[in-house]
Amino acid sequence: MAANIKISSFQKRIKPSNPNILGTKISAVNSTLNVSFGVTSLDQIIDGGLPLGSLCVVEEDIYGSYAKIITKYFLAEGAMQKNFLLSASLNENPWDLLNNLPSPVTEPRETNIIENREELKIAWRYENLTLEDNNQRLGNAFDLSIPYVMPETQKANLAVWGETVTPNLQRGTGTLKNSNCLSLLKAIEEAIKKWELDSGTSPNLLRIVVSSFGSPFWQFDENKSSLSTDFTATLLLLKSIVRSTNAVALVTIPHQLLNQSLVSRSRHLADVVIQLKSLREDPHLRDLMDVHGILELKKVANLTSLKPILGQDGTTTYGFKATKRKFKIEKLHLPPAIDDDKSSPDHSSSLGCSSAASKTNLDF
Amino acid sequence: MILKDLLKQPPVSILIQDSFSVKGRPLFLSLIHNYSKNGYSVRYFKYDSPLSSEKSEMEQLKFSWQTCIFNENQDSSRTAIESCWSSDLANNGKHLVVAIDSLSPLLLNWTVGELASALRNLQKTTAVAVVALVHGDVHDKETVQALNYIFHCHLTVRKAQGRNVCSGVLRKGSGKLVDSDEYYSITDQWEVKDVEEVVEPSPNVVVDSLPKNAVPKSTFKLDLNAKEEEARSQVVLPYIRKQASSATSETSKGQIIYEAEAPDWDDEDPDDDLEI
Image (cartoon, rainbow over all chains, first blue to last red; front, side, top):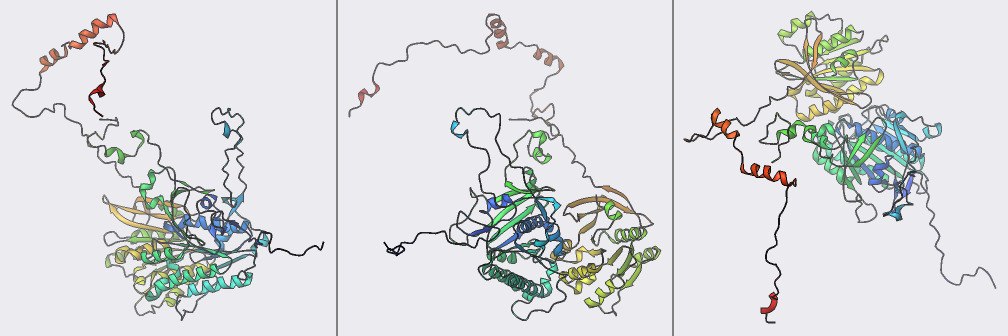
């Protein structure tokens, strides 16, 4: 019998060869390739990370310190995954950001095999399950207090853009007039060409981080008439660059300093919008347990389908805690209602007819 | 509590914001004086003309600093001013402080972005600390907000209870933000002293208790005098008497005594009269 004669047109389904880009993971929700933020708790909220080819805008807290932590984690995760990194900043030297990345630590795996566990009499079916969170953990854990010493091979994958790199520039003559923006986009294009990320077959990706875009250092106010077009045109061009290449961009904007319409435009443009609000901006947040601020997901776009990606229960407001070593995002909850004498003086004065001096609980 | 830290070592940039009612120049000058005493090399650029009352005060200060007075005749273009700032920066190892008094005339012609990039250019070559004074009430809110963003430490002076208060935020290199609200005063020798934290006095607690004799005004005599009060306290209430007598028999606290009367059960069928 002659072998290998194809009688039917049946083709065995083989796994499609995917280029297996470094640092990405296929999302279970919509099969996009997702790029981890570096903060595992943030990844869990946004379905595993940023989709490859998307633009994420982070609306900074006042003075931007917490947003900086997020960008550090993002870059550190890229360094660990051996991605290409481009750091752009006019506020400070962009090399400062790259030289102070948190270093990875292996967290002790909480193998929750509790030795002296009592026998479960009622829930006996759960006896053999561990208490570990079985969610896929994308990425590593980092320690902010230890600066990461990058290996030499990784140093070749870095690029920066900032004041030191670009001396006095010419104003643009086209739609985009701001010279800083033009130079930034040019630098990004050069980096992409250099690393051949637009070929479609590259196994690596570029993580672009633009810090404090729109701050006074960018000199958008030089020409009032072109302020709004420059800002939005740059974001749009950045988005189109990352869409067509293996890249993902994280842009932080100091939204308190900008016109509200610009902020709204950037929200419409971006694919993922995260807003950070620290405690000092809103004293009412002090009532919430322990958190250092609020993180709100203003927008999480689904690039491949119409179904929205939300958190498990549709919550979009989370709290974050930033210690010297770690940055963690958690669900908000009110602190337990304790006795009146522990509450702040504001509360006791609202008791009305009771005497403010005494701390007795007059319950009627 | 940042004034003490500021006096010890200047951060990258300090902005002192004052207003018409409270002058910030004394604090500004005393900070600079302190730095020059501590070995920093100070270059003082004056763009505001001082009031005549202040002129004599400033003459008192030992102008060991290098000053540069800005006249209207001089070239006011940005490049000229920037070069003025950064000229002779290569210093003999001493730390440099550039004092700008004040930013308000500059902001008339410059945008905040230009000022920001001018400051960055200044700090490109050597590590320079910039101390600047600005009159906050002259500029609009967005400008002041943007200035606060650019400068690492911004202080506002105001008056509270007759004393000078300086409040502000210091942004440390590590990203930590330190708030402060402090009293201060300036001596004749341009020294900052009496720095102490502003503590808000706790609001006077109004004891809102009801008065003892909260009896409504009426024509009836409703209060008791001493004798009547005593007699009242000696009245034995009826239930106490009963309790005392029954306490000997039982110690039960509360008992429901139910005596079943006529049986509750009705033999008739209530649905009898329905005609279905």
